[in-house]
Length: 116
Image 1: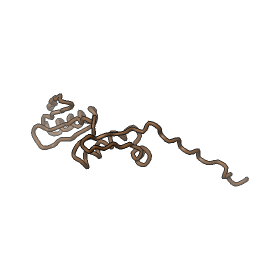
Image 2: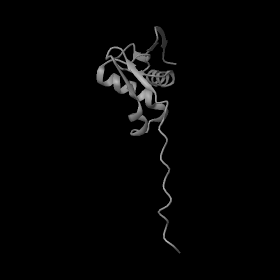
Image 3: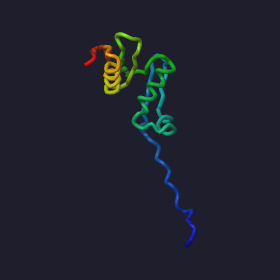
Image 4: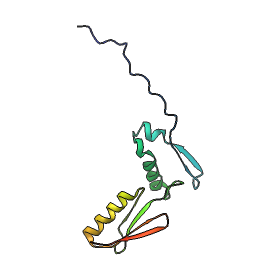
């Protein structure tokens, strides 16, 4: 049996030509998400993760990102999410465990979930 051939090599990856970009007018900057895609391997969650990291480090979200805010109406508990489903899941879980009402706010709209 002959040793494996060195002729076979993994073909080089084609560069992505439609890397998402994120802008922030408050920071007056724009970022492409090559690092999030190539190094962190975040794929479809790259924009969401960048927005969450940006908020964590600056205290504000980038342009065009409006979080879902779940706030307990009785205790200081609350969270911010970038999509509706996890915000509602957090609110339902909090009301279930505490019987507290939770306010869900997004883009100027507000709803209240109460204990069932």
